[in-house]
Image (cartoon, rainbow, N blue to C red; front, side, top):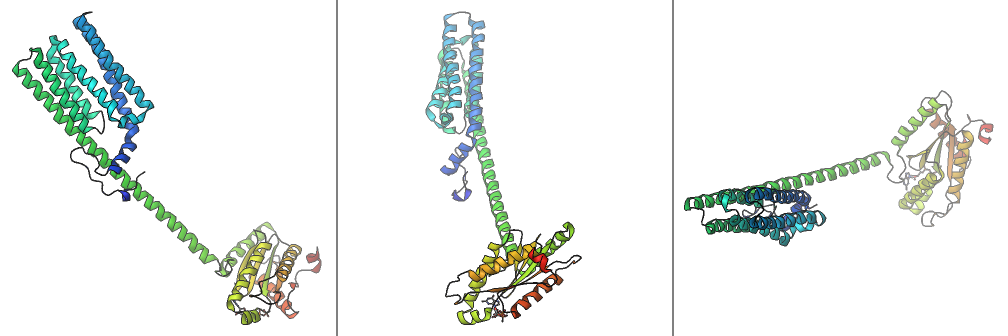
Length: 406
Ligand SMILES: Nc1nc2c(ncn2[C@@H]2O[C@H](COP(=O)(O)OP(=O)(O)OP(=O)(O)O)[C@@H](O)[C@H]2O)c(=O)[nH]1
């Protein structure tokens, strides 16, 4: 579909009612091609049918005479040509935009109408009706061809009038009447087809504008959704580590606490603190410290299940909630995590010794409805670990040794 931005203007020609912009005109034509082909085929079938039906009247009027046979040939050729064109249009839609087949069909129709005039002299007055009908049909049923339709209709009018005259049966008054009738048919046909062309194109322009507005709205909606997503991410995420920030961690952990109480499933917590991090910061610089924090966060994430929740608690301290993890499971996970960080080879420009972490671990006790007590116990255990020399997992004293070792 064409973008109206790429169109210089949507003005219409006053002669043909068509778009002045060739690209827009061709786009319009292809958008209505199927509809126009359908209309034209119906017109072709109807004309062929009418021509054949008229043969019956010829027979009633002329009997099986030589003139009748001539009329049969003329009508047969026209009807056959129209039927062939109608069938061909269905198979080859491009015929609609090709001038030769349509012009040939029009010329055949007009010539036959002119030739019929001297063959049916007994009802010469009635010959005007098909000529007027054909004039209107040529303007209205063959789309987007005003100049050709005009040329064809001039030929038809002149030919029919000349045929009337050549019979010598039409008086001056009759000739004037026929001329006026054909002139009127031409004027009405021309104006109607101009108006039709204009209306169709104005409708098409409005449709394009509507589509463009819709597209713009859709882009705006997408952009808003992207911004909302970005805002949500910023509101929930710690910029340095990409982990949940403290506020969002609490939100998620509260939900887990409620779920564990409802389902009666265990919920483990641990606090992780980097050992002697101040010294690294002081020696290697704050940027190196930042890189280490981000790497530790990534290592933690790798060691955890998708259902575990990790957040940056503050500075160089992380907090993890482990749903459906009893003391033994929680211990296994955090001990694995501690060992992973201890063994991890950080680039020498970040830290010149093995980095370690101390972990304090606690379990939510039965009946606890808030996070504060369990986090306080995990923090207390962490503090004990720091005092014991660091690089260790300390289990809160409320968890029995057996439960942890199970
Ligand atoms: N690079 C960097 N450093 C941070 C950030 N947040 C906190 N820190 C530093 O982390 C250090 C924490 O130092 P301390 O609380 O004394 O603890 P520590 O040196 O790790 O010693 P222990 O915890 O007792 O093993 C401080 O130097 C803070 O400046 C951060 O976002 N980036």
